[in-house]
Length: 201
Image (tube, rainbow, N blue to C red; front, side):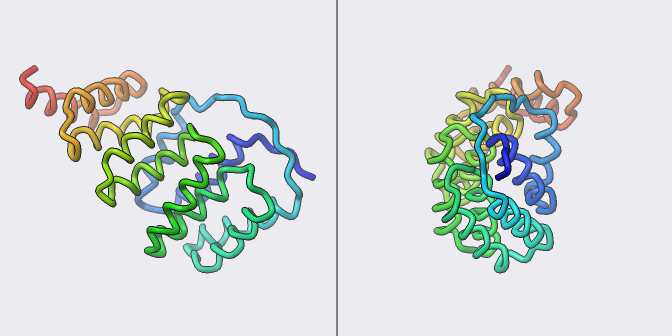
């Protein structure tokens, strides 16, 4: 048996995958500055499940999504208490162009942990791509209820509010909060200045 902390296992597992995907690189870099400190129940997992998960990550790292998918599906059959396999499987399906399956597994991840920041961030981004903006906002908001300082979700909610929902006060609030947490971010300063001028502030 192997003992791991669920939130740590989930996020580290995601990072190993997401770091190599261009659309997720920004999120990964920002994860290092995020306050994801919630203590989770320690979960004991079988060593064969952990080995299979690590094998799947190697396929994901090589962008071999078709090979990773059946391994992750088997991992989930054996162990349904961990978020990371659900999220990684959702990402693999999304990169294979199977949006329906991607949503299924992202939703599976949040059914394990409703407020999980990485899972909700991925689900929110998927919903945004699908034009389901209210659902995207709900996913981001779910994460922020317990992880209010998680940078990728803060930024993505701001982008959703500004560019898609046109809720400028919401966007400005998110951008300002982001800058409070990452005060040296020059791009965010520009975004705030531009949005403020458009709002007449």
